[in-house]
Every structure is written in C-alpha cells, then in structure tokens.
Length: 102
Image 1 (cartoon, rainbow, N blue to C red):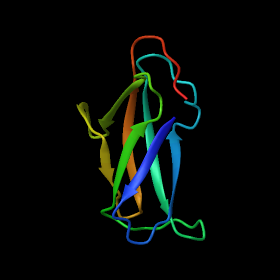
Image 2: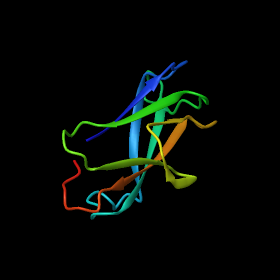
Image 3: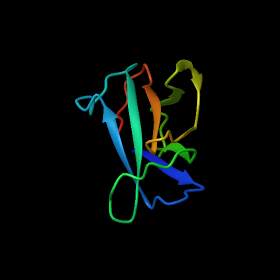
C-alpha cells in the first residue's frame, strides 16, 4: 500500500490518492505508475493550497519499487510539494523482479 502524508498543512485535513492512468491498478514489473495526492478540506472538497509537502512511503515490508520525480524519473524522491490546485504528483516505479504491489 502506498501512503501519502501531508506535513505543514494549512487547511487540508484529508488526502485523496489517485492512480494515473486509472487502469494501472495491477502494474507489471518495471512499470511507472503516476500517483496524485489531492488535498481535501473537512467537507471533502478539493483544497487548492500550494506548497504543502506530501511524504510518500510504502507500508509493505518488502521493497516493491521506488518513488521518482515526475519531471525526471532518473531522480529518486520521497516527497513532493502541492501545486496551486493542492495536488502533489510522484511516479512510483515497480521493481523489475516479480512482486506484488498492494
């Protein structure tokens, strides 16, 4: 399971994480999966707050992949900042060996 946590949130109280493209629920080894974390307010509405840091982690004890910079997938990252729409984006590259991502 991928976990996205916000640090220094000004307004948001929740995060909605989506996968792009939406049909990449079961990636194969070596796939890049783009993840978006949308900040939400207490009513579940999008919170367009820029500059909040979203920390990305895996809850699995096995190493299933790496988080990468969407602008340059050769660069490893563990966090991204929200844009003017309150969305943080990161690429998750699955390992090239067989493993299950949940």
